[in-house]
Amino acid sequence: MSSTWNGNFSYKAMHTRPSPVREILAVIKKPGMISFAGGMPAPEVFPVNEFYESAHLLKDNGTELLQYGTTDGNPALREFLINFMEPRLGRKVGMDQIFLTTGSQQALDLFSWAMLDPGDVIITEDPSYMAAMTVFMNHGGVCRGIPCDGDGLQVEKVPALIESLRAEGKKVKFLYTIVNFQNPGGMTMGVEKRKKLAAIAEEYDIGIFEDDPYGYVRYEGDHLPSIFSFDKVGNVLYAGSFSKILAPGTRTGWVIGDPAIVRKMCVFKQSTDLCSSSVDQALIAEYCQKGHLVRHLPKIIDNYRRRRDSMEESMKRHLAPLGVTWVKPQGGFFYWINVPGVNTDELMKRALDKKVAFIQGSAFAVEPGACTNNARLNYTYCSPEVIEEGIARIAAAIQEMKAE
Ligand code: PMP
Image 1 (cartoon, rainbow, N blue to C red):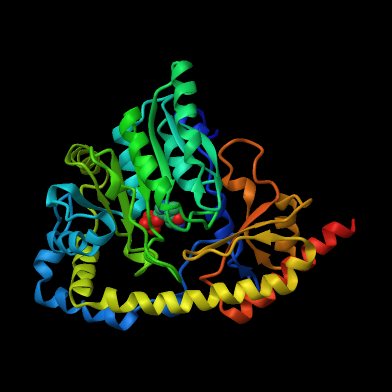
Image 2 (cartoon, rainbow, N blue to C red):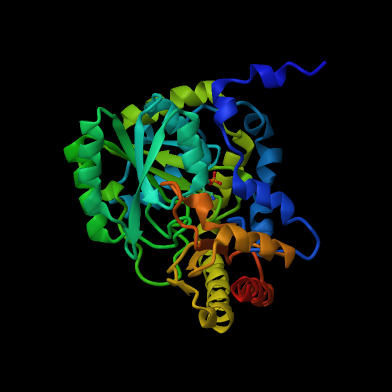
């Protein structure tokens, strides 16, 4: 007798796909494996001691910390974020415009609950962050991709796509964009494009989900104003996260937007998880209020800049002679490389045999069949010496394929 599950799965369960990144994370645990696959921070830069200092709160205020919190999250942390975010958002938002989530991944899910009916269309950069695409699809959304240039999404193509989708009777609900150091592409959207997108959202009456987990990890150049800062009507929802600037284990992110959408997402959060961890939020609030976050940022930026530069040098040495091309990212976690004439799904299998992992471009393709010569390489997790060895192994795998 077989169990009941397989025959009774929901339509959604039968159509959902496992995340290639999370699946690969299991493979990379093998001894000797070098991983450029996940988007993981370097464990060496976690501020263990400074974060531990906040643990005194458990003794001083344990009865409050260990209780359920409110759904919108710790007020002290929200107040800190309102001030911290002011330059990027161009204004100080109200407490009814911000709430805390279990990572920004949950923000994507709550937003989808609030916005998507089956068949609704989401416009995205192509390629894009696959775990966002999966959330949208879990909610019945259909993603349509627009290619990117060196300064981000080809924004000028957005109006025509909305119009043609509307002519087909489709509902375009929102545009999803990773404005800074895009995942996987590494590029950053220019200021004029940001302004234009805010204007398009107003003119075409659509929302924008501005996903910005990497924005504070900038190695050079000036920080750019958010799309949110150009929005006059409340159509832009901004999502931030502590995952890349503090630690992903805190599972804490934040959402800022018009009270109407914030309130709706909070109602879904009530039934999703009641509230995020009050312990995590209180410890982060204390850590931030003590000035640790602001002091920590330059440290991680310096550390990751060195790792990025080291990958740049290693790639110039080993990959450029093989015709591989890339654009140097000004921040964030990833290189997006192009390997002409080489299918990167196949390359990934060879690379895994040589004990080096990355994510093949096709995993990020929004429109089917795209990005087959691309790969995403993370540089924040491995040390410079390991990066050199990993890139040399990828070069050997490419050479092998080219020789056949
Ligand atoms: N958005 C993007 C673009 C990401 O790259 C990630 C994580 N890699 C997330 C959202 C989710 O991050 P978290 O839930 O850890 O905040």
